[in-house]
Length: 490
Ligand code: NDP
Image 1 (spheres, rainbow, N blue to C red):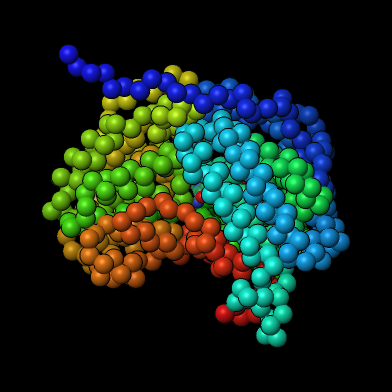
Image 2 (cartoon, rainbow, N blue to C red):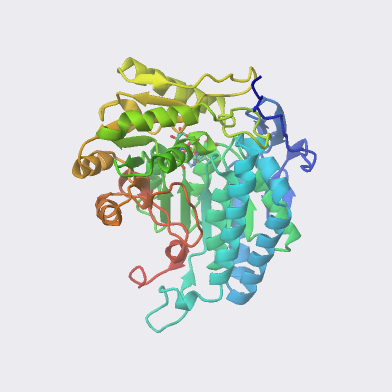
């Protein structure tokens, strides 16, 4: 008699989240109604069920203006004058409240985004708290950051930052933007993505709970037009954007000729390179983590697997076996590996590029896997027989879709890995330390992981080459994005 090893459902309760029917904008320390009409409110839905979670106000240009004015007042009167050691106390307080309310934040993130609870609980939220702790530590040490003035004085903040974030890591991208900005003495107006505004609004409540002075953090919800109004506002000193290369380029064009500073973190098409001496089972775990973590909605996803020809058959067999064990379904179930695709639009894009992959001649494979009837779902998928000319090898799919290419020599691997307009991240799998150093040095990518993938740490800078954007977030280098620096610092 066979033993049944399937998992019983283990859903996390959503009762910890107190969802309101509708949310306003967070301006000057208060939740306020927007200037727009009631009809301009938009709905945010649970992508796993298509259930409406809440109505959210859509900020128009007048609301953005009110938020920027509040941020300017808070900057001039309070935040830029406050000693760094005092700013640090607020950041530590926020970090601790994030930890205390971690379960609530994780459940809300999974509800609004569709990501598995084990990821929001074990990755997103702990790294969010770690970011606030890390930058709290810098707030009173900026003169030792390497960006001090030539006379050793503490570097000055920029002023008001307009920050626009995407939907793939809603609260984590908020932390990457807000923590360094505040630590350096700037105030912010942040626009979350239209499909995932809820954890940013809960973060606004956390700012109230931490008694953060009004106006230091302002949250304006809305769609692309709200983002445009923020970028165009004449009284912001800095734009920080994470999202698509197309919108990043439009932002760069719109601020050209102004003295606004910008950091852009755009897309990627990372190569995950497996050499013939790599520990294969470990590499399979890294490949799975590289492309199926967060449904592949990851700018640094290892979406191109480059495998040495001599081990390709063996590796692919192991990879397919491992993919067959991935559990897709309810994001709130603690056993779920692959949750829902964030939106109908993103699902349509993943489907379209996958169909193009097939029509261009690549071979498509997915494990047998039942997709829920309701919601937005896409099975873990791999394409073999992919050439460098295929669109699935060149464009960011931003979904659970892996393109497999082969190589024979290290120099061919490097050439193929660099043959992309992007340059955000890469992975190298090999037993040889010298090969790791050689290949990592030759790859044009902001981050290169060796024998691991998708590891994030607040102490480590993150950012891209080429069309993946410019500027760095995280680490000491992430401070430079929010300070007036002389010659870029030392
Ligand atoms: P966008 O670049 O459109 O969205 C990112 C953020 O910018 C959102 O808050 C968005 O608002 C806002 N925005 C949109 N248009 C403008 C504008 N003209 N001016 C200022 N802000 C704007 O990404 P999408 O959500 O449309 O995703 C499209 C593709 O982009 C994905 O398929 C993926 O390939 C890539 N992408 C890459 C990300 C990365 O981290 N590198 C993250 C997200 C997407 P709103 O949400 O309301 O549209």
